[in-house]
Length: 456
Image (cartoon, rainbow, N blue to C red; front, side):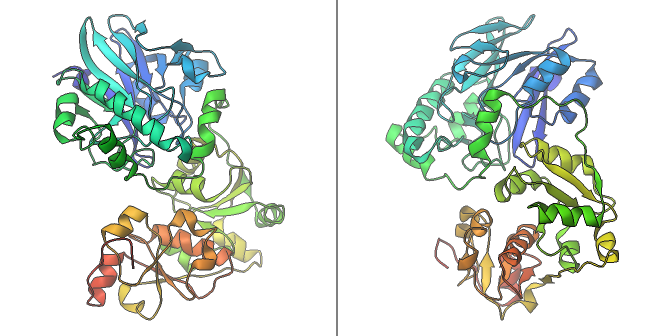
C-alpha cells in the first residue's frame, strides 16, 4: 500500500520495549536504524529480501541496549550515521542538524531533537521533498516522550525543557508524516505510553497528552511526574556505546560446567542465575541462586539486579533456548557468562549437593502472611492489597532489611516475585512464600477490594 507497508520493516524487542527498523532502499541495500547488538532478527529480515545493510543510523547514545551499528560496520561494511556531538570513538559519519545523507533515491536528514540525551537526532526519511516519516528515537514516542533523567537528577528539568522544544519541532511536520520511535511500551527509557509503537504526526497532535500541554512549564511537570525507576545498567551503557561495543566473531559461547566447576566459581565470587520457570525454581534450586525466569524481560532484570563484572553460571531446563539467554545477556553488555551447569539441578544433587525450596502458593493459602508487593510504583499505585508493604524489585537487594518476616511475596503473576524471594533468601530471610498470581487474585480469594494510591 504505502512506503511503510512495502519497504520499512519494524523489528520489535518486546522485552526491552524497543523497535529497530530496516529500510529497503530498493537497490539491494538497506538502512538500519537503532539496531541492537542482537542482530538475529534484523539479519533474518535482510536475508529474506536479499538485502545488505549499507547504513546503520543511531538516533542517540542508547542507555538500555548496546548498539549493533559497530557490528554492522564490521560485518557488512555499513556506514555508521550518528550525531557528531556524541563524540563516538569509532569510525562514523558525524551529522549535525540539517545534514543530509543520499541513500540512493531516498534521503535521510538529521533533525536535532535533544532532551532524552544531549546529542539526540531524529532522522527524516525523504523521497525528493516529501517527508515519508521520521525516526524519532527517544524523542517523540507514541502518546508520550522518552525520559529526561538518565544524565542525572540535576539535569532532568533542563533536558525536559529541551524535550519540549524538540517535540514542538517534530509536531510542526505535516500531519501525514509517519512517526517511527525506538522506545515504546515496556521500555524503561520511556515515560509511560500505550501499546502502539508507530503513529503519525497528526495522530500524535490529537492523542499525545504531552503535546496537548498548554505551555512549557505544564509539559515539564507532566513529563517529570511520569518518571519512575530504571535499571542500574542504564548508567553504564551510553559510555560503552560511545566507545563502541566489542565486535563479536560469532555466536558467543556458553561452556558446559560440571558441579565441581560451579562450586569453584561460586567460591571465587561467581553467581548462579536460574533461568527456569518460577514454579520449577520453587520446587528446588541451588542455594543462593538468583531466579530470573527466561522470558522477554530476562535482560532487564539481569542488568538491574546483578553486576556485569562477576562470572555468571546459568541453570536451565533442557528445552530452553540457550542462544536466547546468551543474546539477552550480551545485548546489555553482560559478557562474563562462565557457562551452564550440564545436567541442571539433577547433576547438582547427584554430586551430593543440597538444594533449597521456596513455597509457591495460591492466594487462598497466603492470608496469614504479610503481603510484600514488588511491582513498580505505577503498578502499585493503580491497585494494591490494603496493608501491603511495597518495595520495588529493583530496590530489594539493598532494602532486604525492610522486608517483613515470613512474607508472601507478590507481583503481577509470580515471576518477579520469585526473583524477589531468591534475593531475600540470599540476604538471609527464611520461610518465604511466593504468590502464584497477583493482587486481584489475592483480593478475590479473601473478599477484599484493592486500594489505590501510594499508601498501603
